[in-house]
Length: 452
Image 1 (cartoon, one colour):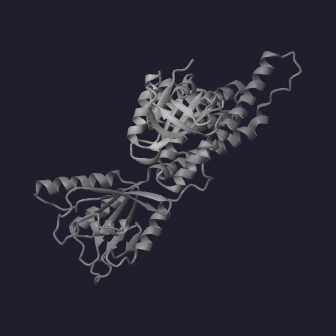
Image 2 (cartoon, rainbow, N blue to C red; image 1 turned 135 degrees about the horizontal axis):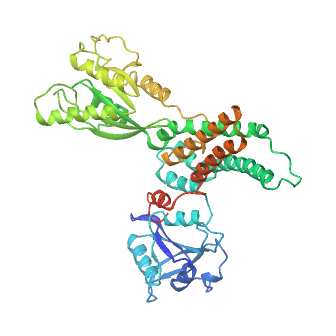
């Protein structure tokens, strides 16, 4: 017996439609008491997944809304339990009153991610697919949504299960020969499985290597725009965003704190941070801003180092170039190309782009450079790892498999090789949820929204 949970799955804002979901043994009984189909038949008599029009009432029989209702019976539902869904008009007041009526009849408030957690626990989806549900909700680009949809459809789990199955075959063959020597079982020859082990390693390497791009796909690229005062940082931010987000004046030190915004550049999501101009100053507040600028550059995946092309290089410019060169990736931007050029850059291995934030000249070159630095992995959507837990499981599985192949090539006995492959199976089990710990499961689903 499972307790019945309920939640509004469409949030608390006013909208055209608001959805109230229930799951558990009592879900259909509860809607029987609150929802009156126009046909006169109870929802317990309705076929699965059929939308029924009727009247939603509170526990006193007072009308709350005219809406639609649908039920799905276990095990053929999203959660694997009896479920019901009320599709109401999107008034938060109506939805709150309906939820109170559902609670009065014995349901409780669903925890964040509890519907999907029950789907996982009831075998309706594996853990990598369940995590993809949250990724779809959080996706900020079409590419991230497509990859999450592919994972929800089982792209990652299919690869993991294929490897797991081949390793299980190796292990079962070995133990069958060992345990039943008198049976007519084909001799176990370890070299006969070399191809399976090599294919597993190749697949795991591709998955592991996709994670670097997957982090960017899902979370975006942290970008710090750094430069000395009046170099054109805030003007660049405004030009990239397409509107006046930062105040731009001729007064040095106008930007005293970091300004953060998001921008989609093709398939790349940039998390832009405009920083205070880097210079020596005795102003306490501006000094704090300069320190934040240095920290932003140290934590960024991409530094845009802005050098004023209309002025000669200053001592601060040398520090800015050093910050850029210490970053994982950086682009030197020679700004104000609409003015006569005075700046002469020292030699640098970093890409250099000349542009004008006033006229827009050179912006296409900057965008092209950024796209070159952060390409998506060249694999089908759904096969890009996007979270650290999955990447860690794949990394450990790969290490075990490489150890297994090394043991095989050096002539180790089969039991030593199989010890490594069984370690890989354990790691793959964590990826799909075959052997994941309860505390890990709880942590995964805690990041979901209520109602999903």
